[in-house]
Image (tube, rainbow, N blue to C red; front, side, top):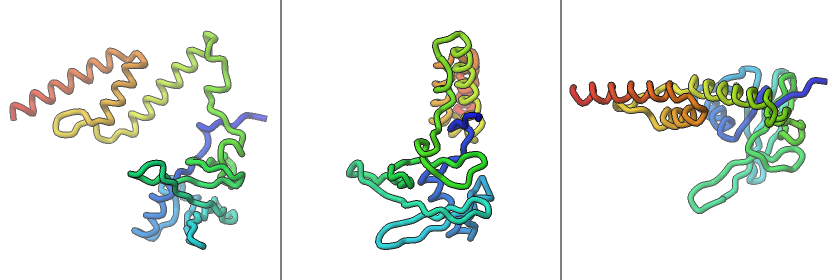
Length: 186
């Protein structure tokens, strides 16, 4: 039996559910914005909000949405898994039809499956971190705002520097100074 890792699973967060529910209100589409085989609906019953998630042609899964007040300034949304745990992510196995927490699915991160102290483990860990960083960069649409790097891109550059990508970060800083200089001249 092959092990399924968290990285290979689709996950649902309260924010993603909210974005999909907003699609229902705005354009009448109740499918997930990335996976058209997943559909959402919601219903309020007895002062509780339930999210109904349908995967493919399976029966809808009823998931309780909860809010807590960890501080005076904001509310935090959670799901209540069928095991009773309050979680911020529910996972769907690659060929699955039911969302559950990582404990119910017995999921672990891929980096937990090897010895990080061994020579090969260190290489694998560094390679996986670089790949993750490159995937993050792919999702940054805008790197400049008013002739300066965005906060998000600066944070990405800091992470790249931590991983030893010194030359790339140096070149990015040179480009930023050139753009700043040209912006001030005009």
